[in-house]
Length: 158
Image (cartoon, rainbow, N blue to C red):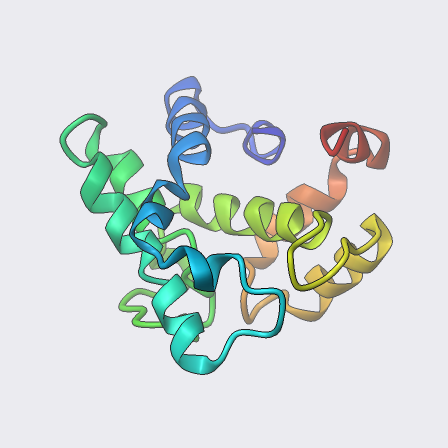
């Protein structure tokens, strides 16, 4: 939400982002729990299996939310340069809310403990974001994210 506010999005767009951020991983109910909870690195086949959650989640929530929220969930793992798994849209053709969600979700993932690794520091995560700007992340979204005061970002992690 903070990124969307920084980008001066409309109240309607912010609500779509809020709703999709709450529901974006609902498709993980379709992912094998053994793979989700694996404590070692995923194989490429396991990674492909986990990534079905975006499309599965979009299908699950389609009957109960608006089409924009469905799109944001469906595309929240698309890479800005088109390098995401089974990706069909690139760059600015990816819905803006999905590009925002992609960055926020990645930042949250990087700064959270996972079964297979400990959390990165905020500084390490920001370094990763810089590295993947223009490949995984939209540079305009990254710019807005980096304009958010660090104290606000770190308070969101608590």
